[in-house]
Length: 244
Ligand code: MN
Image: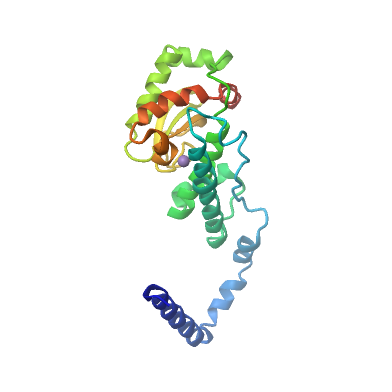
């Protein structure tokens, strides 16, 4: 047993012994456990949990813009861990939300673990579906009209969106959102998103770009701007339009 394991063993043993000694004296704890509302929260099978969406393409499908190794690690390690951790928090904290929308509408009340991992779970599902292989497309219909009207042109929109993505210091996301019908470009820190009740600008997410270093570092290292330029080739504009 190494020192760290030994310390944990001793700590756990002490906790167990203390627990055994103290519990019989704490009758009211049993009353709490029997509270019907508390019990309901604990056992509610309908409580919302996050699910990792199946990746809609192969890890290598987005080459050369996003490499297969980055995609595999991003999906199977980073995203999978957010999902595991948020669902752990939902159970441990007896969170009883009806949906993802409901979960994020209460973001300001969540623990750090539930908030960050919930954001990471949702944002990545959204991100995977925002992308496709097969060359750069372009927005059409009402989406094109909205972009032209709000930002002047697709090129100007891309420039402003890239500025938001590059300007995000450290880890976070750039977003195109609809704020009650008005298109806006915003960025959020960490795994925050525009569905969160305490987001500075809230709205319906239409497009998201992950600018955490884990999203691009293997291929682009410090060159976030090159990652963003390449990423435009992958945007699934049909999906963005459907979200409008
Ligand atoms: Mn990511």
